Length: 78
Image (cartoon, rainbow, N blue to C red; front, side):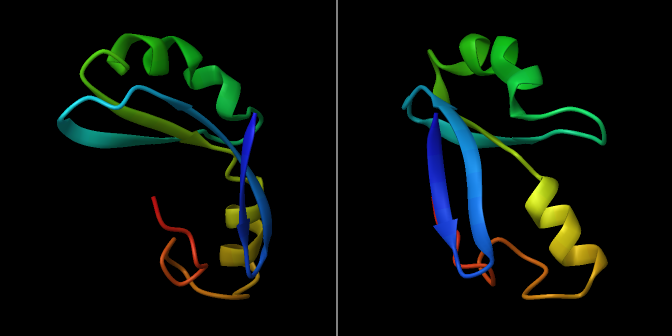
């Protein structure tokens, strides 16, 4: 498992692929984590970069109006 370190904390990520097509970003819903996207990451890996984030920290920060509301404002760049 990879991690992205941001000004707000650490976010777990899963990554697959590096093809020439536009990258795709997967965010899970309430009650799950990034692992629910593993079948999609495997499927898209042949054609594009696919990334799944654990959004628990992002959701908490957004709801509590802490830090930015975009990945760029949190210092996350892919």
